[in-house]
Length: 77
Image: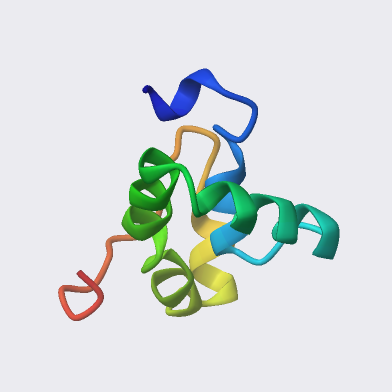
């Protein structure tokens, strides 16, 4: 069962970043109980908030439309 083939396919990142409403979060958590694909997807993204927190405002501002940004220090990688 492909994780991208159902209603919750795009909720993983929003869930990890804490941007779902309380109702949507509860709904998604109930879904996670029965969907190993979504659980795997959430697990893959779980480190994202910690990585994003290491970026400064200047780093974020430096990212241009091409997706290129400042060189990432080895300590972050």
